[in-house]
Every structure is written in C-alpha cells, then in structure tokens.
Image 1 (cartoon, helix red, strand yellow):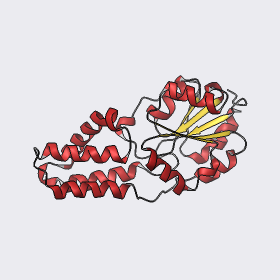
Image 2 (cartoon, rainbow, N blue to C red; image 1 turned 45 degrees about the vertical axis):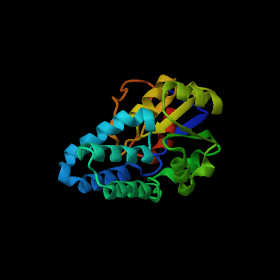
Image 3 (cartoon, rainbow, N blue to C red; image 1 turned 135 degrees about the vertical axis):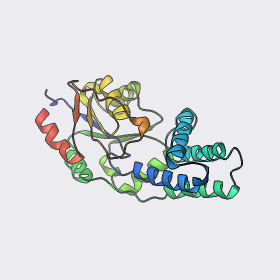
Image 4 (spheres, rainbow, N blue to C red; image 1 turned 60 degrees about the vertical axis):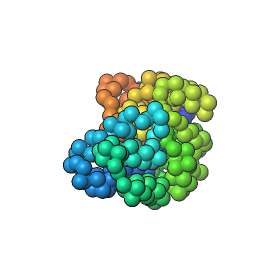
Length: 234
C-alpha cells in the first residue's frame, strides 16, 4: 500500500520519544516500600492502580494525578491514620518525578532529523500541560515539530481534529507511538496509519488488542526503523 500521499506524521511523547513509565515504576516501588507495614508490594500496587483508574476522569494523566492517587491509597490502606510525615514523603516523590531528567530513546533524533522538511511533524501527547512542556523543552526536540498538541485524551475525534488542523486530514497522516490504546487504534479509526513502537514498560491502563490485519497498522521495534518502513510502503 502506497503512502506517497502522506503529508503529516504525529508522534507520541512519553515512552515513544523519551523515557517515562520507568519513573512511575520506580516511584511505585518507593511508595510500596514506604507503606510496607500495611501490605505486600503486589497488594499495594493493585490498590494504587484502582485509585488511578477511579481518578483518571478527575485528575487526568500525569505525575500530579499519580501523586494524588498515592495519597488516596495511603489514606485507604491505613484506614485514615496515615501520618503527616508519610504524606510529605509521597509529595516529595511527586516533586522528584517532575524534576527527572529527560532521556530520549534510541533513534529519535536521527529519525526526526530525516523527516523534518519532508512532512508536517506533529507532537501529539496527553498528560499534565506544564510537565509535558517541561519535558519537550529539556528534550531538545522542540524545533523538529510544526505543531504541538497536548490533549486530555486521545480519541478518534482527537485525531480527526488535529490532522485536519495541521495536515490534509487523517487519511494522509500517520501516528507513531508506544500505546495501542491511545496512539494506534484511535488513529486508525480516524483513517490514519497507526505505527506501534512497543516500549518494554507500558502502563496497564494503556493495554489494548492490536488491530492485526488492518491494512493501516504497522509495528516496528524502535523509531530507527520508521524511515525504512515508510520507504517500503511508498
């Protein structure tokens, strides 16, 4: 199938362009160690995931919502008796996450450099506005993008709107990311190509069945394989 008509390529940010989930996993480990007298790691992690799932519609994605969910879980598992010192420690975990260095993933710079000027390059990410802007600034990738869209959720209508605004519509666009649920499936539903770049750590709430057999679905092991993929499809 030819993509010679491709004009816009969207990229996810977290765990596609730079490391992200690893910091959440590390902080979760610190959280369960802090509350280890109230349950095993697996039990506390499950309770935290329940809180995150409940709170997504209130707090959205990102570090701040995660921190609030940790506090809520601490209150629940201690039956309301969590010490103020523990709350302070959890808050310090969140602040640390918001200061973590940005580590770009392999192949990112070379791929964006090769695509720039040939396509409209878009950053399409969800999460906390300030934190995503911070990571983009620190990544050194900002100049590659013709537009940056930080959204509350990634749905079919999200991609319809963005690719119409910054490109020639979804049918002439491609979305690249590590999340099948957020980056690939809804983009394909909008009519775009969806390229899955798996990351070794993917948040369980981002899991989704791959649309195997869909002519607009592709999977590559890392971003370094995107250029050869586009070349084969053209």
